[in-house]
Amino acid sequence: MENIYNRPLIGITLDSEESGGYSNMPWYAMRKNYSQSITHAGGLAIALPHETENTDLYLDKIDGLVITGGAFDVSPEIFGSNQRHHSVITKDERTKFELAITRGAILRDIPILGICGGQQLLHVVLGGTLIQHIPDEVDTSILHEQPNPRSEPGHLVKVTKDTLLHRIVQKEELQVNSAHHQAAKDIPLGVTVNAISPDGIIEGIEAKGQKFCLGVQWHPEYGVSESDTEIFRAFVASSSTKVTNHG
Image 1 (cartoon, rainbow, N blue to C red):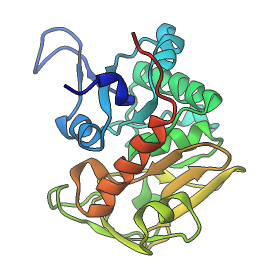
Image 2: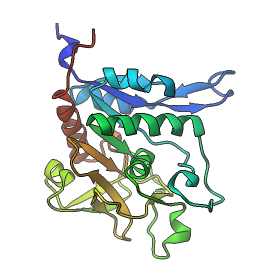
Image 3: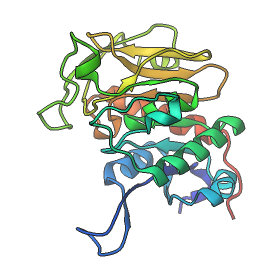
């Protein structure tokens, strides 16, 4: 029988909703394909409740961190904007926790994978700002909220050579799914852009000087291509070097 302590423990941030639908009390949620992608890549997934006061305790235990996406946005105030697009929807408690655990993971050099909205939050933590609504800020933008299923590609991205992402996928172009209306706006010091869509939107980032700190604007947990699987494999493999006794 496999010793589970040989598998890196990967913390995955949860989405949250108020009462209604699933429960008449506030509840957490996470799509199964997030944890399945971690499991298939050789990791052991655990869900992280939004208990900011326990951030250090979680960081003591986990070997890697996945910041998930969701149908909400980082508050513009957090990245210094005094304007707020009418489309912006926030989940303040979730964002408060994700900011804290992401900052802590960076300080400890714990591997990080930011996915879609998780990339946007990672970008803000690394000192960046966001495009609040792509159609209103980029005149020549392509469709970034694809109408077809997320299990299918939505558009192409060009991968930047000599980046972590390029070393992982070994490709200069990827077909990716797309379900976002915001994106990274700038390139702060210490951040490398590793993927760009045909309209110039930043589709991937990584942080210099970290063991593994990668953000992608698409959702690799859907496994649209083999490259998506390779991203999870590389992330889990980097997390394996920190495996500790979780007993």
